[in-house]
Length: 442
Image (cartoon, rainbow, N blue to C red; front, side, top):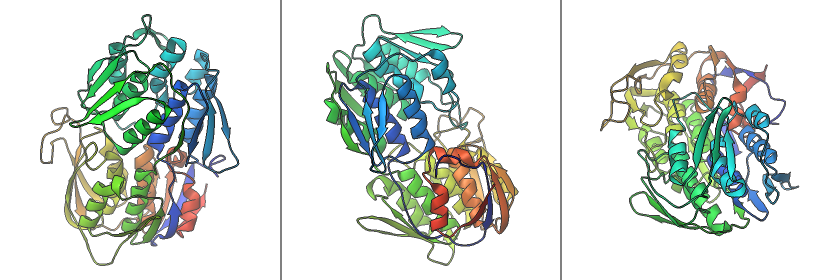
């Protein structure tokens, strides 16, 4: 179960993971669809919701603002009633500030519904700066007034929110979500250029269209939104979590296992599947999911750059790096999305991996970190046997990657801070049981 979880797992590694499991709705869509319910004047129904702590955090934030949330008798279903939205107390919002970065996405909807919004200090995984200046710049372009206060930021919209022509300096997922959630009820037309077009963004657009929004996705990362006066409710089934699916695939590869991921879909995972095949992994796709396995023999090294969609997503990078320690030769990974995401490799080195980090761009083209002195490229030499160690989870994706490393390593590992993994991986201890993993709680 999710709640009452432990913070430490003692993992006995060295055995292949074999079995099947199911992934449900994408963490990066579900929380945003829940926020979209704030814009509605009718009840909303969200299905395929995973049992992860981020859902509980967002539920708490919405309930503070008067949204009534009920779980139905059907597992994975939420009913959200936003008919009585109200302003929350600053202290109550602040209590959630260290847990999630979602409060910044509530701003547009709350400005539409209440005329003001409050942002406390924001939490989230420590994988880079992830500044909210993109969000604040966007909100100002719509007519929001941002006031700095000791306890956070207070936003108002004295003249209401109006459509704008917004160009993002980088196709940020969060800033694109901010534009969508703000523009749908702003007066006039909004044109967003250099937008993120991840599958979760497209699914959020589907949610908003069901509510009555008018949104067109055009060529060259341009999204146009015609503001409407009213939005109704929605009934939506969230797309499956491609990050979790890829994480279990990497676990199968690193442990020389065979894992069937029910719910995984081919189209949103095409960049991952190409890389998985190049490394030497095998997969088989059917109508219910994707089977991933190590076919035997040696795995091949490769050069890889992370990128925004349709490139190889950054969230797949960390679990893949663990598998790359078992490939033959030198693999090169150039991280272009989060500047500190390769910091997790220090613990892998303690487990026997041979990984060297560089400040230079070791990829086909320079990226925005090229002259910023961040160690954002890695050279991985393999194959190297991993050995058990005592390690501490640094962030959500890095944490699951440590778990993969512990499962692949010979001997026993103690993985601390495991509760962070529950932010994005539903019932992962139950799934470990289904795959025959050997571990102890506490």
